[in-house]
Length: 193
Image (cartoon, rainbow, N blue to C red; front, side, top):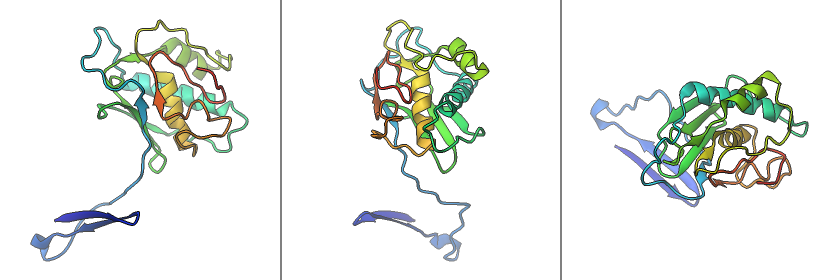
């Protein structure tokens, strides 16, 4: 069997397989601490009628837009690898998104913890095409209790740049908060909600 223990902050994983002559075979074992972005209002018990579920192609468009926005900030020391993978999945509970710097992968919850996504694909396309140059892209959506997909993607890309949740550096202060409320847009380098 497999045993996992934590002693004095050290994680120990022991893999055994007594049925294979004492040999353990595995392709890989990777352990990485991920800091998820969570809903500030918890999980919706029933998804609102008509609430937006994000598609894989929409998530990919927003990742491309997010990479473009982060690249426009002169105060960012690192560059995001354009081959970042995005996965749309049913994440547990109140999780909106996760990112792995190790694998350069972002996971986006399919239905924003049951609240639905606010998805402005015209804005995302304009950002990617360089047509949208306003540095704030203030929220223009109708307050309907949905989460802003652009804010979540920008937060997760921030992790790939090395920022941590609740980072105090000016460029990341707003976007890297560990909780997001519905109907709020947060952007890197901009402290207002």
